[in-house]
Length: 286
Image (cartoon, rainbow, N blue to C red):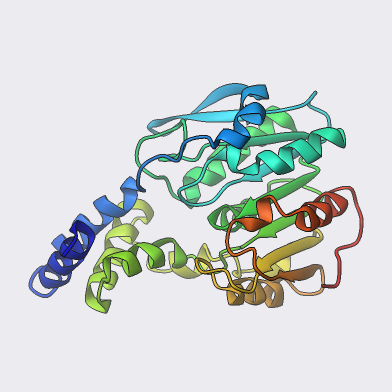
């Protein structure tokens, strides 16, 4: 039995007599987020072109990246166990079109390091980036970054357009992959939820609804383009369908096939759709 399986077995066993302790131990493991992903070789040229600065947020010195001359900024929000350089192919396209991409390595990711942050930390970071760069021509979020992007826009971040790639709709997805990896049973998962509520949200049990991208999504007033692969093994396609229904008529969903969770980032057709939408074209119907 490997280390992950042993850890899950131990937490499941501990959750029976001591759920609070099991939940806290699981939370400490979850917040580590895994090893930082390095910049991929094919992305190093784009990564090296960025102006790198930092933002002091909580316990972190958050690494931020900006490309271009500052005109027409486009915010890029990466997902779990990723980093800003994930967007390198899109950054190239946006620079060619005269846009100025802006991104950051989330807490616990990339050059920022440390423990992982929460949706509240992402909101603070995005707010500071808006103060630095101004209104965004568009916001593009991938996976968990898509959920963070929706929440930021609901909370007053200004942007003209929103692109959601392989989007997380339900906030509980932030722990679903971790729980599945450790094969946590329902009692241990409930203990983890409680530990997260207490540690980060003052014991508020409504966070799983309030921070879901579907919550009050109908209040978004900007056009929204969603792209999601039918065979995505990490975030089910149904998550984007749920989000589409919640946003309403201002949103369109493009369903791809064979790109799985990360293939959208390099797929030429997907990049064409994203950049055309950022430039003001209507969202495609399929």
